[in-house]
Length: 261
Image (cartoon, rainbow, N blue to C red):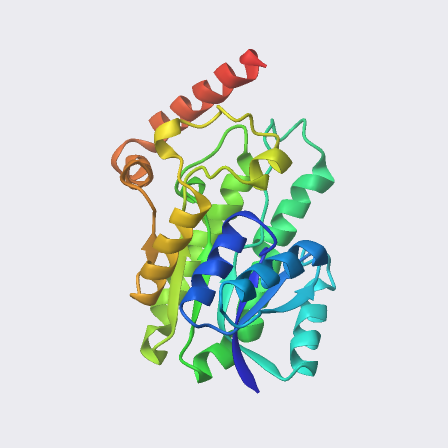
């Protein structure tokens, strides 16, 4: 079985930037997402830069059969995951009581269920190769999120799971890291319904900068990587201030944004 680095949600944004970053360091890649044309265009672009062309497997990991289908395709191709990059995910902006229930449950299905399934499914091979798991979380995982309640909760799950696995697997020389960016101008915001000026500009980073920081921190064996000093400060505030105070501030900010329309 050929060891590979699997990147989910690779068709755009941070996932695509991570694909370029891993490829530039010589990793044999498998890219997966729902959209095959975008994946193939990305694979062609990586090959045009002089790197090995990644394999492409289109899969909808948000569907119940998505992970099993992806795993079967890897098995059939004689590939074994040695590094898993769990990047696929999405969020929605709005009051949880008003947003569509099925769409919110889809956040949990992709951000948590699929991520956990992939992680547990591929841990044996990852351990054999002394590889690693890079989970793309968010600074949202460090604080409650009025206006994006389910998304914030989903990323808190990712941070917690990652930290626990980092501790459990370090004796096996397996790297486990949570990449926790702040706002990034990608398709994520359009899908979530987030206005372009919703987040403070000081927190914003490019997808490429996030990918570079994530790769470097992951390879260095870090447990958590938060790109950008303002974002690192943001993750500390909920731990230094009373949680109720942080919640009231975030609730006030969401109420203000909601009134603005």
